[in-house]
Image (cartoon, rainbow, N blue to C red):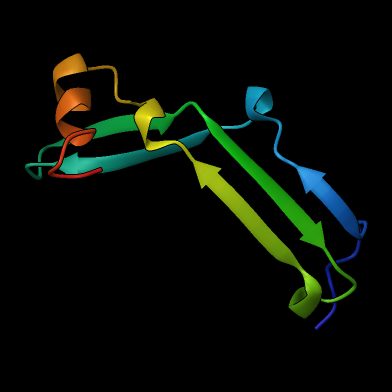
Length: 81
């Protein structure tokens, strides 16, 4: 399988200032909790085929931010991270 047209083979690096690693989860079935990670790094090595293409990413769990300090402390603790 070939790489889609318009994607140039090479190494691409995540620009964290223009990227988001964000999520939304349901809480108790009635509300949504949104959060994000603010510290991450990633590279995509685009090959001439999908089999030759690789992604490597590192997300710092300590950078978890849901906008609620109590929840963030709990999530960063032993129960989750």
